[in-house]
Each structure stands twice: as C-alpha cells, then as structure tokens.
Length: 376
Image 1 (cartoon, helix red, strand yellow):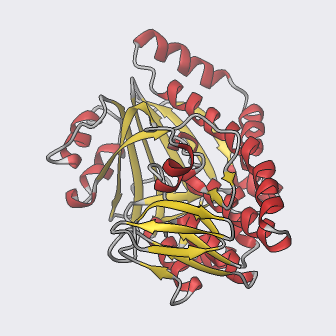
Image 2: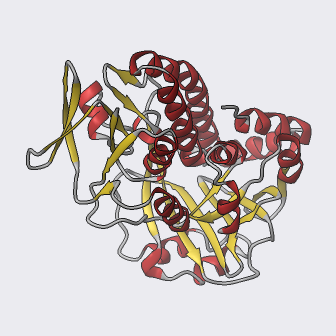
C-alpha cells in the first residue's frame, strides 16, 4: 500500500513516521519550496506526549524543550485568577508537558523520517479518486498516484475543499501575534502564564534557557495588517504588568508573526472513499486550549495504527469512530474558552474574572484531565 500525504507539518510528518514504523510506503507532498517550519513556540500537552511515546519519540522531544509544571492565570493588574498543578497532572497521567520551539520539533520529526519521503514545491490543488487508487493533482497538473490520500494540509486544505466544498473557515473575532524573546529569567520558571484584560490576552512560557515563547491575542477586524507587529503589540499591551512589556521589548521585531484566528464547525466524518483528513484539515480549532498540534499528533498515530491493522475502508471507519467525537468536543470547548477570553465590556470582565477566581482548583484540574487524557 502507498499513502500520499498532502502537507509536511507536524501532523503530516508524525503520520508518515508512524506509517514507516508499520512498513507502509508513504510520500509527502509539501507546498513550500524548502523544508522547515515557520512559527514560534508550542506546548505539547500530556495527550500529545503519550501519542509520541508510541513512536519512541518522547525522550527526544523532552530533550529539545522544557517541562511545564504549573499554569497561572492573572488579570491585567497581576492578580491571580486561576492556578493549575500541571506537575501533579503529569504524575497522575504518566507523561510530561513540554514547551518547545516549533521549528525544533519540526526538525526532529524530519530527521526521524529520513530522506526520500518529503517532496517540496509540490502543492496539492485537488484530487481524483479511481476504482483502484487516487491521484493527487498538483498545481500545474502533475498527478501523484497512491492507494490512499491523506490531507494534512492545514486550515485551508485543498484536499478538504475537493472532498467537502464547505467554503472558508470561520473567523473567531480575534487575531494573534506570536514571538520568541531571546532572554532569560523574565517568565516564571516552568510555568505557562496567561494574563487577561478587556478583549486582550497575553501568554508566555520558557522554551529554552534563554528563550521565552509568547503569544498575544486581541479582538480585531479580520485581515488587518501591521507595518511593525512588535510595535503594535507593545502599544496594545503597554498597561499589562511586567514582565509582559519586557518580553515584547526583548523580541526581534522581524520575528513577530501575526495570524487571524479561525476554526470550523465540526463535521461527522474525516474520511470518504480512499481519502481522509488529519489535523487542521479535519478539525481546525482555535488555539485557546493549546490543542491544535496535539490533536494532529493524536490523529497521526491513531490513523496509522488503524491502517496497519485493517484494509482501508474499515480502517478509515475506525479512525472516524475514534476521532470525530473527541475532536468535536475540543473544538467547541476551545471556541467557548476563546469567547470568554474575548469579553471586552467592563461589567463582563468583572463577572468573568469573579467566576474564574471562584472556581475551585479541583474543578480546574478535573476539566484539564478530561482534555488531555489519551489512549491509543
């Protein structure tokens, strides 16, 4: 069996590694001219680390990032709203939480996959299914044939568009900026911290001894552009407590990335015929729960296991059975959490913060546990 994968992001690479472990032939078609990953940082939560354990990659991932032991939520005056004992959650579920640079994770996965699998400058524009296989059709008309096609080509997936024709993703009403400050000692050690204001949020976590990954979120009209993204963030968040202004100031202006936030309404199946979807192509979610990349890794190991143990039709059916309900809940919960963070009226923020402060730590831990539980 030969599987053609559209997209060499985290989900596509993890899926290809899992297929190779099962001795299944795979080729990845990547639209970019060269291999590598844009972006800043990410946090691989317990569910993703448990999935990577099945590929014997957990220790290697731990070596290129830092463990996260606590979560702290504050208001824009620095007062604590919520706390989460992530170290306790890791002990209970038997896996760490790791913050790391997205580019380092991508490089690790690429090195594990080896040569001859990823083809760059190969953008999948559509596909045609045949009785005995499927053709991925590239820009320019070239066809790449395989027994199966898996779309791991992101938010605006061409594979999904051909399969479902369901239009553009939904704009969530807010935009985000991301960066990495090359500085030590500003963020609280081993802690992911989020500070919430009126329609504004800022998060930070150390990803290396001298690097702090940060993200900023603000309510905005879609498709706005910044001449100087760092200056915009510095101005919008100038009233936030330290170390927020210092972290932004320590960031290279040319490395600040702005991205509008989108998701899609959940669908009932990720496969049709000889074609399946994975990661953001299947279930794009807002980043509010930090689960986008984690769910893609889950998808990858589950789909590979299904294909290794059954013909493609029952394998895809099992994949849908295992993944649709799980990802639906995360997408909708993340959307709800994002709406809560986007509240910008004074009275709304007052009651939101009161609700957060009044929620027992045990309830926060229980909700978090449900989010990150994963078994292959």
